Image (cartoon, rainbow, N blue to C red; front, top):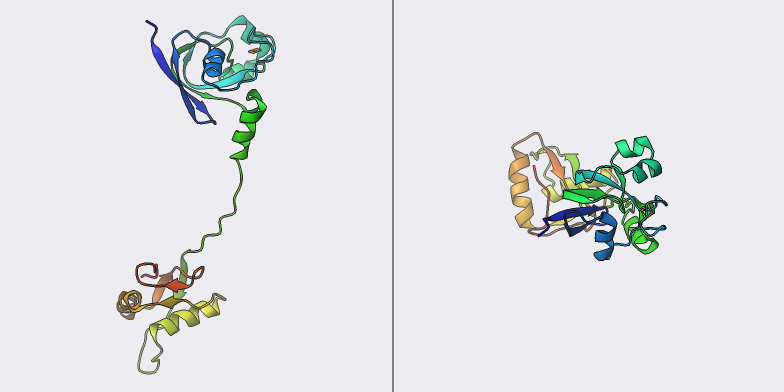
Length: 193
Ligand code: FES
C-alpha cells in the first residue's frame, strides 16, 4: 500500500493527504483545489506552476526544464502536473495558478487595514499631590489628557485607589490608556504605573 503524505498548500491554508507517487495536480483537483491546467496536464502550458517550499517531489522532468526558467527551478518552482509527491511537503500556489474563484478568495484576504484601537498606551506626567495642590487624582489625569487634546475619562474608586498609591510615591510619571470609550469603570481600566 502506498505511503500517504501530507501536503500543506499555501496561501489557501489547505492540507491534503496524497498517496506517494501521485502527481500534485491530480491530488489537488481531487481535493477540490482548482489549479489552472490549460493543457489538461500534459506539461505544455506552464499554467499549473507551484513552488515547493519544503519536502521532496520527483526529480525535475525534461518538460519542466522546457517550461520553467532556470531561476524559477532554482527557486523551487515546479509544474504540478509533472511533480510526483515523495514526502510530506509545503507548497506555495502563486495566485495566477489558481482558478478565478479561488484566486479571488485568496487575494481578498490580502487587505491592508489601518488599525484604530479604542485603547492605547499614552504617557502622562503628573505632579505629586501636596498641600499647595489638592486636586483629585482624576482631575489631574483629565487635565493632563486635556493638555494633549484627549477627552476626559471616567474612573471609579477601584481604579483610582491603586493608581493613587503608586504615583503618590513616585515622580508622578504614568502610563495611561485613555480615550476611546473614556469609561474606566472597575475591571476595565488600564491606567497603571
Ligand atoms: S497543466 Fe499544463 S503544464 Fe501542467
